Amino acid sequence: MNSPPLRLLVITYYWPPSGGAGVQRCLKWVKYLPGLGVEPTVITVDPDQATYPVRDESLLREVPASVRVIRTATLEPFGSYQKLTGRAVPHGGFANEGTPGFTQKAMRFVRGNLFIPDPRRGWNAYALAAVEKLLAQGATFDAVLTSSPPHSTQLIGLELQRKHGLRWLADLRDPWTDIYYTKDLHRTAAAAWLDARYESQVLRRADAVLVTSPETERLFRRKLPDLAKGKIVVLPNGYDEADFQGVSAPPTDCLRITHTGTITARYRIGELLRALVACAAAYPALPLRLRFVGQVDEGVRSQVAAAGLGPVTEFLPFVPHQESVTYLLNSSVLLMGIPDVALNKGILPGKIFEYLAAHKPVLCVSPAGSDADKILREAGAGQALPYDDYDLMRRTLDQLAQRWLRSPNLDLPAAAGAARYSRQAQAAQLAELVRAGRRAKRT
Image (cartoon, rainbow, N blue to C red; front, side):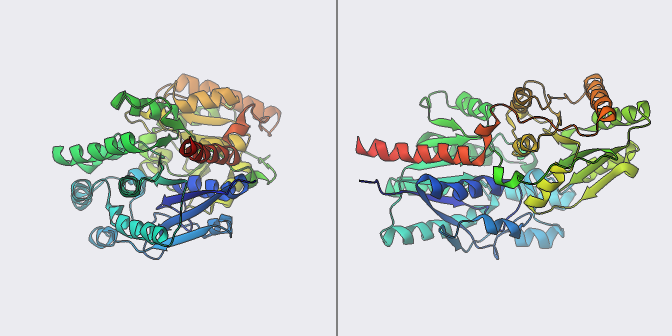
């Protein structure tokens, strides 16, 4: 007799038509889980009431028609923020705000001390009410998965486990109290204590904690060394093979270096820009071009202009995800960075896996020995270029320039082992976690 399908309740604030990197993880899991014997139900926020930094309507097409998506109301302070500051909803790490003025600093203080863990906690009551309604109607679930940021979403899982004893998978895409922009919130000691208490409760009480990098696991275990072995599961971000069916078409008239996504002055690409200028001077026959697609703060734009690279640099706004992939495929080399902040060796942007799927060399400005550095080395796609290591940057660029002058196609062969970063493979790992919970109930 066939076993009944597994049922997973997914609770996530970021869901199509939200755009950006944060939405991809749950979306791709839900896309592939039905084919793996798991029936997901999604609870998310009503997009007409949500405060998304960016929207990508095209992602709605990736949600399987069989998946039930329940959208709820919310109550958040970002409308007041926009009126007081005249600015858009802040991106993660305030990437779209530049140098804050007095009003912005005051609003950050309010956000950091009155809205703990974060301002989207006002959604929790509505999400919880939606779950209660499902349970009252007789719905059963083998597990509930809460995905964050916003980390306030994890408090929903905490309450559901306390009240109903549901098996709970806490998916933390980023660190919590140690996230690099915490200091920008100007928290008092009392606010910091409360936030740390919430973090500790989630880590201790969740049945499993999913993180995106080995360093994040080490970070949490340093805080709570008595956590059970195997409780924290490293399930990195990845790439969807279906997104990369297009043909790679690197330009033949220039060496185009492309960055997609968000980048700020904290990424410290100044030395790399200086090395690019020197490389261009050393190889007059090499036409270099830079392209940034997505949110680029004024600090980076100023660095590009100061380096004299303005005439060969193109800045494009946020684009739908599939269009972003096309830009990757139409590039010679890809650029990424890790912000120069505390505990940054564990920052593992989702874009690294899409960069690998595009089979391009990668220039990665980041600390040596980071999780990103290890993955790039294993894949043969590059290595970390430490922020101040101008000589290594210059040597790397010289090698790429010489290769391009011999042949303008710098595409790399598929990396051995890269298949484990496919979204299908990761959905299979998640399905196994849900299945393990059902097996445990039977024993």
